[in-house]
Image (cartoon, rainbow, N blue to C red; front, top):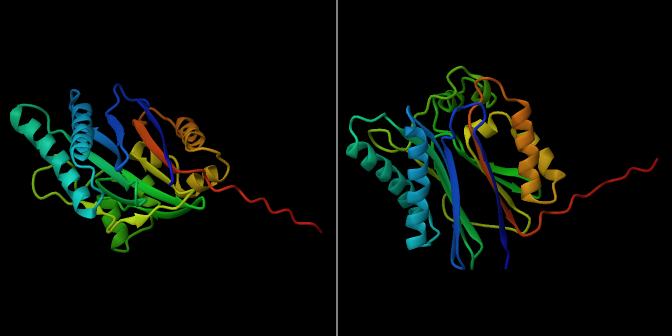
Length: 257
């Protein structure tokens, strides 16, 4: 049976407080990892992200089932927790948050994931990007409609405008991976907020993973890249790395002439 190793990094960047939050819960039945990026004035952003993480983990711990339907239920529970807090404090700020959730069923080695907003889930297989989530954002909508390339998510002036977020009024738009996918030995998952992926593009994620022995080493390399890119407006940045067993060994090819 594959064992899952977890590593994480969460830093303030150049902001006054860290409005990101992350956490995980594991048992012999199932594992849950969650990352959230909160927003709102006067400290309500960090409250929102903590509410999201707590709601997801508590709900999963009470019922550690891995399914597409349960991911939806977890995201809806996070939304309800933030909305309840806003109703209890109607004079407070309009706090909201993004979220990314990964679930793995330990006995069957199957995974599902879901997200709201622009916190992302990546899957790398044999150290190559196999899947990444698509943001709920204005810029992603423009890209999907054929008005630009994926690089716009890192460069467009309106890249932070979300089309769905935990805590927003109206119907919650969320995305789920679908029926559980089989996890293979050596798979690596990366879950991160926009303050992370904005400064580490996908080719860099791949290249750093190819020469990392562990998920923690991989995260450390990427975090160093984020720090090198910091400016006066740099956001909080948070990531969780989930390693399925040992990472696939790097194959070195030597050409002899």
